[in-house]
Length: 338
Image (cartoon, rainbow, N blue to C red):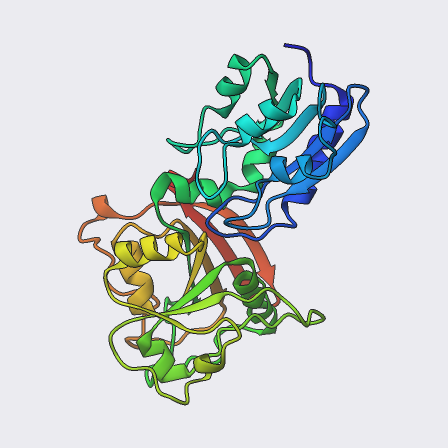
């Protein structure tokens, strides 16, 4: 196997850019570049969503018959080796007569993996490169493949004495405008956002991502957990992504979300729902806003999380500390996320 060339490394960087043109969903974002034997770009492609041509096939479709003979295919994810809604990309590359394939991340699927081996058996020179960058591109999708559920971030805002609201239940606003602006950016960065019915009834949130200077910020799908009815005039009913409801069986509900292409879930409210995710071991990341204020009273930021003795404490790893105006942002992960 020959060394990775400069042209192939540049093509891989381009393939990662192309991959981001495709939608997040049930399938991963994948990009591909076809190079001539002397390193010129012949064609580019990316995956445009479930049921459409995979990135390699999309790139090959840009060429005339025989146009890829002796070429190199550079693709961010190992070419698949199974027939689903589309045929195996490994076979498509073999049929096109490519001489070499360079790929980034390995395909983790039981049915779809081993495309590289199939290509080698067909006489194609296969190399792997830029694994970390290629895997980072589809990290959330890979998480879903490993766990069968979205990656869950639990968020809350609290006073320094651990309260999420005053004794009468009022909570707007504990944090300042800088922290609230950060929340909206976090909303936009996630595929879905979750609250409990209690939060809907108490606060009537919109759960949209409103980012200054950006009129078309990506919007999360709102998911409301709980059994109580959502009022007909609730602000959520006019959300641009529609409204999804869920019951109390968290693992099953998360599996359903993953099946619909939701890779990341932002759990925003309130203490009951956040505590339920933590108690069930379904919280992977934490975004906590600490406001320099004291509230006292019974409205704690978390309820029972299944810790009865100090030996059962849920230890986290702090990954980021940042001052946001007068507030402090703390980001952390579970030890399993390290």
